[in-house]
Length: 371
Ligand SMILES: C[S@@+](CC[C@H](N)C(=O)[O-])C[C@H]1O[C@@H](n2cnc3c(N)ncnc32)[C@H](O)[C@@H]1O
Image (cartoon, rainbow, N blue to C red; front, top):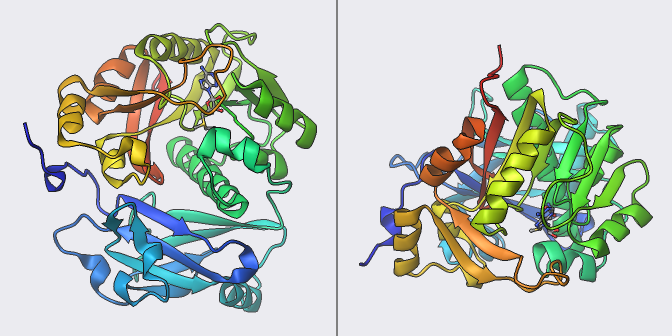
């Protein structure tokens, strides 16, 4: 059976965006690469979309081919429809002129139309300034994110921290309280959790099967509860311990049996009015993925579509050294998530492009939808 990439169903406009970084802040040139899936191709109209930094326009969209470094507009073999290039030094100057500069702080970057509406929920990025130190070593990062520059790692964590807060605020109508009880499930070396700590959240717990990275968190990030958890639930926490549980790229690594057991455990840990936000790689994410391991063959798409779930096999990065083979590479279709995970949780919605090539699903406890 042959399936062509272009027949993929991509559910929202501007679903995917990437913030491409230079090796360090001072190297100045950044690119937001946007993947426009609309027939209208609105992104290609120069000037139709702006980048707003802390609410202030700082740059406009342009065709990807005209970038000073056009390769920054590529994700794997997929080229962005359009891109916004900006200089950090210009953003800093413009924000200072408007009295909107804060250091240390996280600069909020949004792609907006002339009416200042964000063009897509996930066209939201963030740049940490004077935050995100210390950066974990390559040995730590490689276990959770592959080989990548420390600055990219810091920036991606800031982007996803911002997305999580934004999605929670959109759902509840209020910013997450600083004393909210938060669980980072699969915390790794705290790529995201560190920003909750640095911005004053006082009740952050982070758990992971990987003692190596838990030890790094304990040694480098005081002010939070980091613990190793077992490969199998239950955890040590009491029922309803958390107001927010997020897990970035954990369900992308479990067998279907572990997945079911851990979803039940997360449900046990979630407070009645709590929210869970869990990412997964969908068919769309596979299409845009630049990870060679996930490079989809037509037959793999077929399997994903027919079963809704595909396990590419074991991934050997060391996190499962006490149970080799536990850690997999897994993708799920939207249909599968809606069908299977709704047996455990009420599904609020799926957010395509939540974290680069990963979608997220926002969950509540069953039968307790917000009032
Ligand atoms: C791709 S990494 C992502 C780490 C982190 N969330 C981040 O975004 O940097 C997946 C993490 O999940 C952890 N992990 C895998 N299975 C787990 C489980 N059942 N419970 C907790 N952590 C798990 C791994 O050890 C690894 O640190």
